[in-house]
Length: 164
Image (cartoon, rainbow, N blue to C red; front, side, top):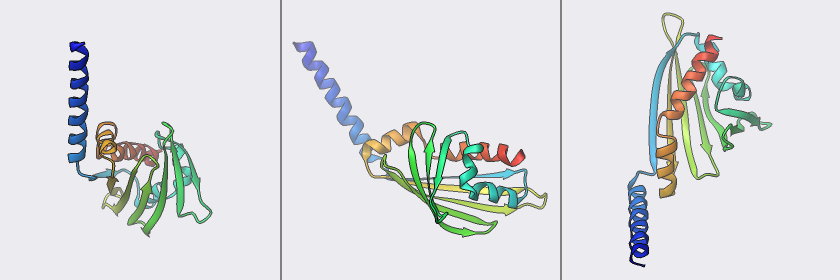
């Protein structure tokens, strides 16, 4: 009986400790990455802004359903996660902004900035700001999708698509 009580106490202490740690994490995190892509800015911008075609070159996206207005869409990831997006701003060949939300409890903003280089390449900077209200959701997000990890994957796929 004593072993059971100690086991239960350990589980309670670890659970409370994990929750308190998760609650101490900031609800909002931001990550930014810059890369030079060996393709002209018009090609890179077209790849990024043509969301309907992204399942062809993004390894993490199974499908995209675009609304009639062309400014809203839902991505279905290969892991089964549905994420809703809405274009919130666009400056042709310079900037693309979107807001996103998921039923899994996170929302955010993603901004892509594009600049041509003298060598005919494109310097891109992607900045992602993610907000997760739930403390447990924050902990899961940091473990399974740390800030910047999605941008790195996106950039690798974008580089490969731009080179094709």
